[in-house]
Length: 371
Ligand SMILES: NC(=O)C1=CN([C@@H]2O[C@H](COP(=O)(O)OP(=O)(O)OC[C@H]3O[C@@H](n4cnc5c(N)ncnc54)[C@H](O)[C@@H]3O)[C@@H](O)[C@H]2O)C=CC1
Ligand SMILES: O=C(O)C(=O)Cc1ccc(O)cc1
Image (cartoon, rainbow, N blue to C red; front, side):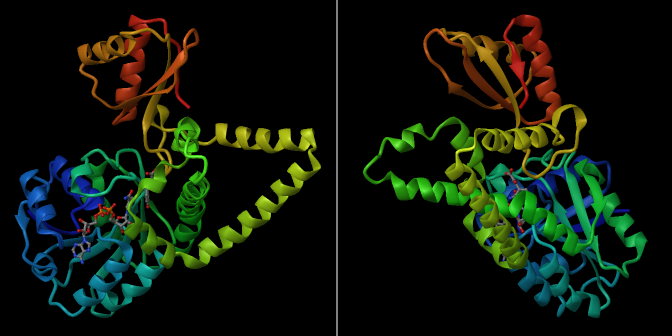
């Protein structure tokens, strides 16, 4: 039986969901709407959606599933509007927002009308936004969190889980408050720290313009997420305000402790600070070999110790091309005469990275690392 799916917001997440749902063998018709006609048109041309709707309302009426993939403050407004429309009585409405408590509260207007709303959050994404960055494999091996109302019928959760099967995400059911606390820790607060670090660099650039040139390697890696869409992060910060204030209080205490530690100049304590962090981080699940990816572990990087001589990069890309392994990015972290440079090659999936490592280990004796 054909299922009609409406996707509202055809950017990175809505576009990637459209592509992912179409990969399965289910008979699905996707109607899309985006406030930007150019985006909806591109989604149609790329085969992400089957029909471009002329309004949110016309996309939603007649749909068996409605997915809101808009910035979270917009989703709240659109859900309130949707509660006034004549939707299919057995429709399942969901969203993809990075926050869940305010969305679940706003969904009560849909519940009051007898509609089913199940909160959703695919824990995968990128600092890039927009339909151009959409990829069908974005959610593979990532947690896909669902936050049904406590009273929700399990059959509805199963129906939605079934629709999401082609995403190859790992569906996990969580309570909305629990979700907002955990995402504040691993995603929302780190984002604020990344943006603050960039802000500190900008503030101190004046009078020492060269400092920007030194901000390569670690600084760039640590602050990659600060390049994400400010509208999206403004909305997330406003919606998860309470949890973020708690994280911030903890961070201020932590920074005070760090300050004390440095003032005391106690080398054992300083060592312990870095050693504890290293040990804990080294035990975090990685994306390697099928582990489930977390929100902050999105790129499948392979670090290769290469000698600093001309032609080495083309040697590597040639080996990968012969094996038909596509890479998404390639960069040199450090390269100086007479020492090994570190080449970082990024792949779309853990499988591509594994295949690349195998091919390169057969063809070269360069050592390789996954951090
Ligand atoms: N970017 C990421 O890495 C992740 C984002 N999310 C969540 O998914 C949602 C979408 O995020 P992205 O796809 O990254 O954003 P995006 O900016 O790539 O896409 C959002 C789309 O919504 C459209 N839009 C905005 N207002 C609209 C309206 N009133 N009616 C119709 N369309 C409208 C925009 O034109 C845009 O195409 C957000 O709620 C975000 O919190 C969830 C997981 C990861
Ligand atoms: O780019 C990254 O590493 C991210 O952390 C992407 C991301 C952004 C928002 C989410 O709610 C989930 C994932």
